[in-house]
Length: 338
Image (cartoon, rainbow, N blue to C red):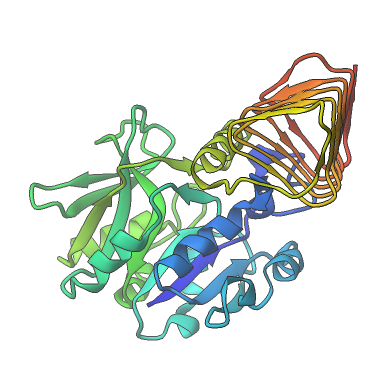
């Protein structure tokens, strides 16, 4: 099985954080969101991957991700440029040559699934009668999501992209397992009212053609990290579930630590309190401050005489004399000064 990861898009809901980068490279727990997507695919045994990138940000993605060797010698990454943002189905169509006749997984690069995708991948590979398998999550408010309707057998019988009146509370997560039949289905659809080729429309075309589209229900957490609120939520989930504690920097004897904490090499913690889950990046400096919980302090950040919690500080950000910073995202090299 091959993997296709969408790593382009403008990320307008995250401006100005995405003014100079793609949203998939924004960090949670001090790693790009995209890296967790690649982690999940490789753990599921999917190591032949295509990253779909935009012309404007593709070079940065290539620089950060490389050829795949960061995920092991057997992982190979091919880059495919989507010439314009014309929808998920349009992006998938660009990988037709890469995919060939193989089954494949499409994974949106700003989508985080707590349980990973290994179980869904195994289910799809063992069900040769499935043309597609869609990962779904029951949500309290399905407005703003693509939604699916599932029959008593557990198969998808209807898919709708962000309907004003959702026919169910099953949100489409953003992970799809597909066969080559999806390309003919994409060829048969037309752009939606927003001018994009929707993958939900292509999957609906498969259903219309009596192809079988299965559903895999996500039991744990799922975050679409496409907004500031959801980026902070993703940071909290990843810190809680995936942080590997380690103390590799310098911590003074008059500082205190509680909970899972990771302090990277070169970081200096003086007269401060660290409350996990928390990660402090390389060469960061924290003095006379209280940091955490659920906070990521990026490489080279400085925090002096301040309290910061449930926040993300991107590389080089600085906080001085701020008594209560909560649920904030500080851009690279920005300064917050009380």
